[in-house]
Image 1: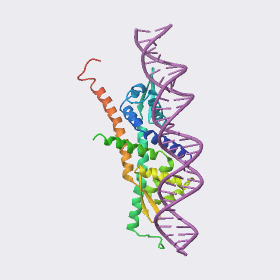
Image 2: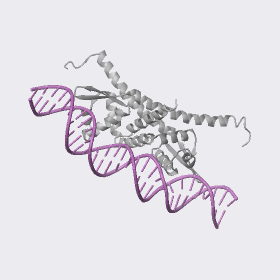
Image 3: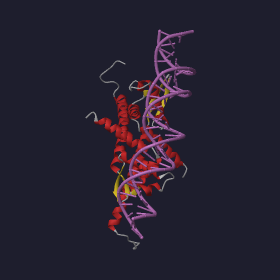
Image 4: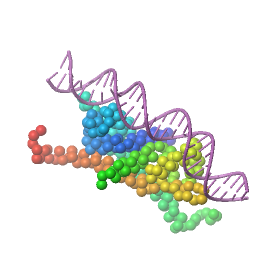
Length: 118
Length: 118
DNA sequence: ACAACCTACAACTAATTGGTTGTAGGTTGT
DNA sequence: ACAACCTACAACCAATTAGTTGTAGGTTGT
């Protein structure tokens, strides 16, 4: 299963990058709570419509939100599964840290059982 | 408690940005599992020592790792509390999503109890 | 003392990013 | 039909980023 890992890393790059901007995080909060059109979102921020539309596109490319067409409007809503997948990446990092603690505990409990040279 | 929120957002920007690079995520994995000197880390990647040193500095500025001096070496180790604080930001996003579901359930359970015009 | 080693940072380059304005195409209501 | 509206995207600009090489200072072992 090597080769898909690059894709996973690409996906992680895109997700973390999308989250690394406060305007995008705010947009994400709004569209997680409920559907919003791009124009409705744009009205909330002190920047051009095009700028907000770009932020929405970044979130969409990262898979954090999806859009659905309703007539002339594009309604965006947040994808909670994507958020969870980011969370699980962090949990994996935590498990590495717990692994370190476990290793230290081992050293204290039984000082080098099989090997006996330094 | 308004005014500290800007700082929180700055911190979130820095953390997510630091995580949005696969080399930095890999460095973080290694230093969560155990202390590594900058030179030891640099040996693992196909880029200059200075480039890796910069990545370490980005992680450090974001508060995801810390360094300790040991003679001529700088030993880096991961801060699991910082990782957890990023995780809790995602959990807050999830709770917004659950709020939406709760609101939809309300609508289904009792169709407009107080107000009765469309 | 001195050579080897580890780190930090400055200066530079190419690519990316976050913003702008302008243009064009599809949808809606009168 | 047509004006108002919503969206998408291109072209451009300033700032930032990820990489490079080079320089300099502190530490270690002989």
